[in-house]
Image 1 (spheres, rainbow, N blue to C red):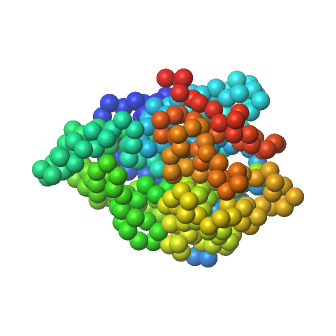
Image 2: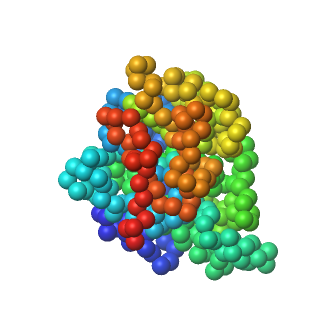
Length: 338
């Protein structure tokens, strides 16, 4: 099975329409029916936006923003886990096969952001000439679909163990509304990706990807940590988190929060709201990506919120269910696995 994923990650060309549609359709069905002991249904009878693993503990790997880095995903899957995390000298993929580990990604699958500014600018020049599937944007989308295809494949193989939270870049329609905002950074990335997919694959691929995005969870909790894409803007209640898709303010507040704009104490409020065993609150921390850091991590909100997205590094977070998280030892690099 790993060889199939490596083939996706190392592909020299864009995947076929049928390959993408088949994977996306299967994962859409998985997510739309993912009402389980860890994912309570919302008031509409659909899978809620909160993942609660406090009754089903496993060692946890948190993956920061990916941003179309297939080499990062490959290195993660081949990374050999420390003996004090999972014994046996297993790689991440081997641990998944044995159901010994859980993965939560904080979001942002698409849109490269490191060493590709020139490619985005070249793609924008192509678009200005009404060339929507030119070499620059095609190279960008090859990386993006390698990541997207891998994430879909992993979810299809290990539905209870692999989870991807919605980030602000999970907006394939590039819409503004319901907590989403059209995306622009180096170029007009959001619009360009939408137009590429429409031109190269067709509206059905755009639609099926949007269906997946619309049912992605937004926040996860274990017995010692909470995870969302961004620092929570406010201290949302549990029922608001479960029903987040019905409240644009909650979606925006978990995916778009800039530095220094979150309500002071929002992190602790959510921890207190979600913690199943209040005496353990002291051991809880809250992880997020979104805004980049220059080091391995950055502490906010009196050390309770840990930012983990350094786009120039290939770090993952190892959270053990039996002890308090230590950012100095439990954030590890997989970059040596080329």
